[in-house]
Length: 428
Image (cartoon, rainbow, N blue to C red; front, side, top):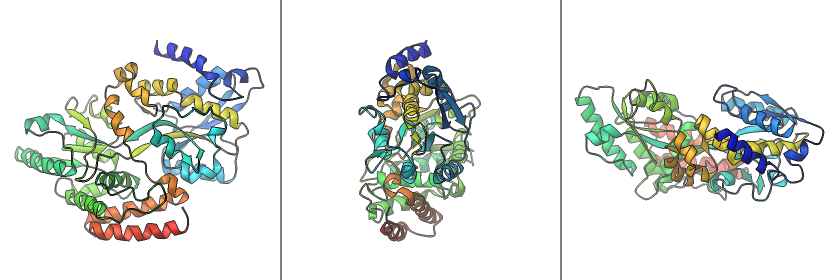
């Protein structure tokens, strides 16, 4: 019934998606083939399904191109294709941190879509995808960092969900000691992603921003990281390693941390929304015992979650940019995002869907994500453009040195500030 309703609504909406070249009128013209780069082509990839629906609606054909699962390999493939000005792919699925890197090779979608095309989307995501006034990608689904916790253990030991990082530290210390005394020597208070990689950039940005320490580089391109609040955030995080978090956290990514929590050996976990269904799924040691909340904040800040997610863009070298833009509008439309959320559990980029009854019936936790996503903090990828990879590398490497005990917070942010200033002088 949901799909029938969506199809009826889609037919009514399709004509308004693209000015002067709507999908309906395209049926009366010579059919074209549009190539779209989706995900890895596995069962969780909804992109091919949506693309095929567009083809059926319009009379055009779609060639689905499966790309590497690794985002690093996917970006490399895109850079090769776009660098050679290849027209082989019309529509590209792009990570939230890529618009600033790839914008020279992407069309301005505002030239093909209605003026209100971005209405109802999370503003931070639209801003992230707007480079020098050009809308180079449309948001498809999003992610944000969250705090997972053992609600049974908080209740058992008489604690509330922490609102500050210091409260998390104190509660984790208390319950970890109690659980170990009760016989679980493998129990830890907090599990987070501490390996020197992009995931640590996400974690550290949350620590710093939630302490009121800025976002590395602000919207004007000014380096802001060298400040006492940022230093304090990193020092606090370093105090967790070997106390409430294992030494192994220095090499942990998302899946290692999920494994610790899901096996019943952690009180708190920082991770992405995908963990919810897995932690509560069949075979999980903590099913039914898990709560989810916004991340804590520092003494002089507010809760901040790093935004993640994926978007769709159109190659500047496409031979059919208007049709490609129509396909982008179709896949990122409310109807398709709703189906994506219900069938695959992905988080929509359209705000109203977080109050949609059918979406909430499929995944009640969606409503709890709304405020987190509204206040989410994007990484400074758009403003730093091609230099973002170097910015992120510098940030996670300095942060890792602090976590490892090789630097203190003040020295790290001072060195990092100088390094980023040098990068900025070359032009973002």
